[in-house]
Image (cartoon, rainbow, N blue to C red):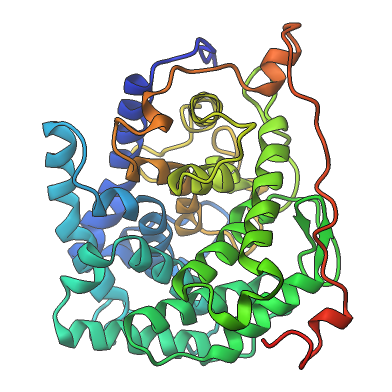
Amino acid sequence: MSVSLNLTTGTEDRAYFLSLLERLAEPVLTAAADRSLRGALPVPPGRELPSYFGPAEAVTRLLAGISPWLESDAGDSRERCLREKLRPLAKVAITGFTDPRCPDFVGNEKGHTHIEAAYLGQALLQAPGTLWESQTPEHQTQIAAWMRAAGRAQAPVFNNHLLFHSLLEAALARFTGDWDRLRVDYALRQHEQWYAGDGWYLDGPEFHQDYYNSFVIHAFLLETLRAVDGGPEWDHHDFTKRMLARAQRHAVCLERLISPEATIPVVGRSIVYRAGTLTLLAYLALNQQLPGSLPPGQVRAACAAVTRRLMEAPGVFDQQGWLQIGWCGAQDDLGEPYIAVSSLYLAANILLPLGLPPEAPFWSEPAQPWTSRRAYSGQPIPRDHSLSGDVLSTSQLQWGTVSW
């Protein structure tokens, strides 16, 4: 596969991202709105059964990536037309997997649904008007009940899964006022203790060399705090500010992992989420919180180049338009046992900046070469410095010392 590494304009990049959004969303939302998503999701060879969680997994992961765009009214007439087409499908799709009478319903008896509930919570928080306020009161009650049951059906797994529980509870706080504050508190405090320094968190008691700091940890910490407005109990020691500084440092590290050829290291589990590996860059870009050392035009150029390389490879989509398991093509052996076709739609996270209007700096600034591209062509680059002095001591985290 040959991918052009010529820097493209913001208009060209936005058009490409929109074409990818349509390609990802069309099969998922059309089948979900028809209440036929469970049967429509392909089952790769060697994986005998469709994922029980498939309908919820595909819809929520897709919506977590495209919901800011669904909520927006920006763009040209073609973009607005596409949005008006997908909005009602997205709204109806949510009511399918949360309705026990629907063939696409996903219950809680097998666990796992706290993950889908968290991505649903993220989508609702990013598109409250489109995905929550437009629902009937009956459907709002149904959706909230499904999320609440999903979050409380099992004890949290002692790793990044704590943040799935915290984010779904934060969404319940925002939309219903009925939430488990302790699950939010526990996830935030525990991740403070798992902070390893220089923008990296452990994933549980041990460090894992993978992209979960980008996939989940930083974005979910920030989104949880944003949903509960920081809260006085979490503002001690500038807690929210510290979380953002760490996320920005991790974003710098992530951008520097992108090679001059727009590749990134193939390392760690869940690598088949493809462009989703750059979730944190996309999330900070959406919220206009990129660090000063990462100009928006530079981040856009890097994200667009990596996305084209990963998503345009032969075999990424099957003949019916569904994603196939793999990194740069169809590579089914890369999928862990918990990976199904529905899991792959976390790749939609790269589309988060579409929630910004075309005139925002991310889209309007001229493209700039990303760090390694400048470095390997002999151009000047800024020195890299670690983030230090941002670790709370164990004693500061004890009850009564910090009023959590």
